[in-house]
Length: 183
Image (cartoon, rainbow, N blue to C red; front, side):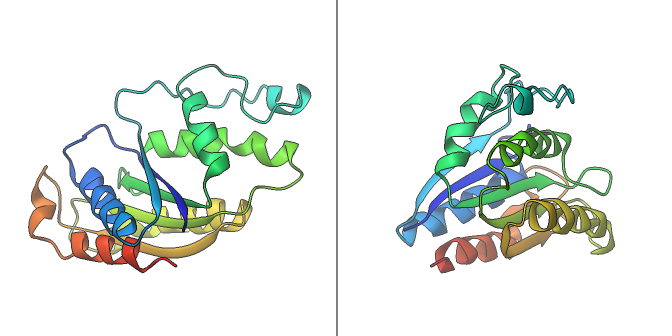
C-alpha cells in the first residue's frame, strides 16, 4: 500500500485540476492506497525568502509559519506525491511552484532529498500540446532532476478552460486508471 499525497494547486475547488486530482484519488483508493488531498485553495503559503533559516537552524522544515506547516507532516509520511496544477502562462501554478520552493530546505538538512515517486496532473484551456512543454520541462528539471523523484506518469489535459469542461474528457478516466494502476 502506498501513502499518496495529492497537491491540488488551484484556487478553483470545482475546477478541472481538482477534478483530475479527485479522479486519480478515487482510482488510488480503489486500489487500496492511503490518499490525502492537500488543496491550496484558501491557504496562505508564502514564498521562500531565501533566508537560509532551514539550514542555519537545523530544522526539518521551513521557518516560515504559515499553512505550509500543515503540509510537511504529510510530505514526510508520503512515498508518492501527485502534483496537480492548472497550466498558467505556460507553466505550473504559482501555488505549486511556491510549495516546491519551500521543500528546498528539507534536502539540505537530510543531506539529500527524500526519495519520492511523483505524478503530474495538469489541465489547460489550450487544445494544443505545445503550451505544456515549459511546465513539463520544469517538472523534469526540479522534482525529477533536482529532487531526484521517480516519475510514475503524467496526464496533460487540454481544451478544458471553464469549470466542468473536463466532464466529457477522457483525462478523468486516465487519471482514475493511473491512480488505480500504482503498485
